[in-house]
Image 1 (spheres, helix red, strand yellow):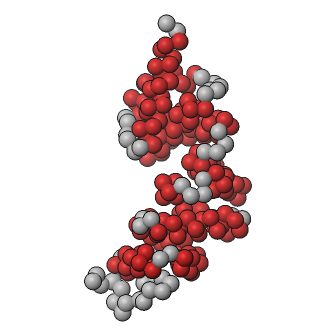
Image 2: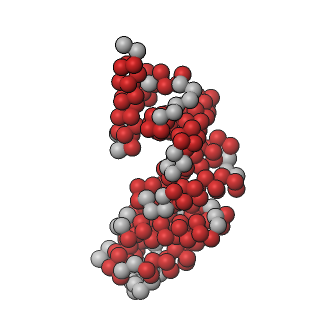
Length: 227
């Protein structure tokens, strides 16, 4: 009678976390009401449950940052930071949570150079994770000079991989945002891709009025005109 309810709660927690990873959404009050019990658990020794707890509190923190603000938002960020740190203590090979710990640290106390080690841990544990790269690459390019040589190369290679995977909008956002000051290095790195991929990316940029030179691709006279 005492064990089964906790097991049901655990299964529910894991399922909600899995759905959040898939991109499903919940009303925060539903999550808080259903999983209030997890807040009283100080030391979660189950790695799966610890990660589920981290995922749920990350979701709540993200929601509060956009919808609530103020003290409630700060409390949720701190709760999420503790949950993420607890999960990483049990499974330090979680690239996604290293990235999110980096973001939480910056959100709670502002960027500091020592936070870069958290982003580097994300690359060390998952250097070629496509779904993580969508969010991680522009963050890495924003602090590229602070990263060590190995992680700089990983960030550049990640940009190339985004282009190679046809994620042109994501790659363009990286290039036109924090990556713009490094555009020559990023564009030169595209030379390792097959020519068709370079041509398609160049056309996507030109169609958006971005006149840059992609290796091996001739620049049209009127790059803003769709052909």
